[in-house]
Image (cartoon, rainbow, N blue to C red; front, side, top):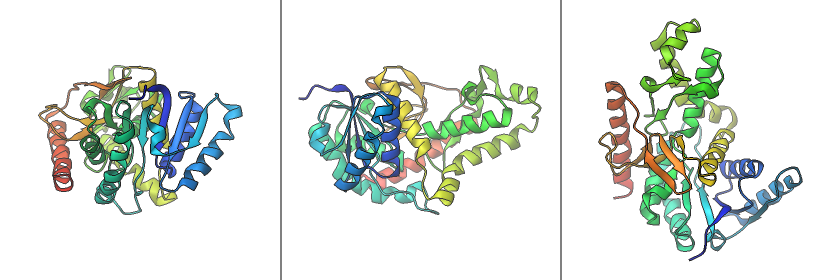
Length: 316
């Protein structure tokens, strides 16, 4: 078995998301080696060359196009391969297409690397994370998806704009499915420990429910609006991939709402969805319990049931 190189990443799929993620990771200086793999070898070579030409302005790094055999010692394998979301198409519409792609990609990864972390970014991320866990045979803590890390960032951004405060001081999560049944966990949201409603009133906002409904809806529809305007979303998710990789490589034990297989969490088992989790060098250490209102709890159960029904149909 190959010794894992903690400074090596692999990216499978060099479309918009894969190449933007590769660029974000090059800029981050987290890795000293990165291999890009794509069904179209020329595409991977072109992206590797293009990104490499910026290395004189960044940290030393080896970036190249490769084969699956080149991932044997990669610490993090980032899977973005899959069909993209088209205008008018939901993330769940993609599911059959992309599970089919995963049935060829994931066994190839597992053939060469059994000790790295599988980070799933392709959509629908929850179903594909579940599929990757089943197809790879990796321990569940080492297979997780980007989940609602980006949705949560969108929530923080919009709340920061609404309140006129630094969005990094906003502590709030989107949980459940990365998609149409996602839930804004308002009951546990604070701004630097101050309950949300208190700081809203301090900033001159009193129509709490209407504001919360609008912001949650805007977060949910963000991707659709971006796809409508520019055909794809990739910068936000690339920054999310970089953030997750930071937590892994530096063993930060950061709390991030990644998509992982649940084990009797809020009564949910045997499906992947997003809940805040401690992320470090070994993957998902543990899911972090957060307080939910009865309505949020019911919505989470519904989100899980939606995903489970699809997973059972696609991956019996």
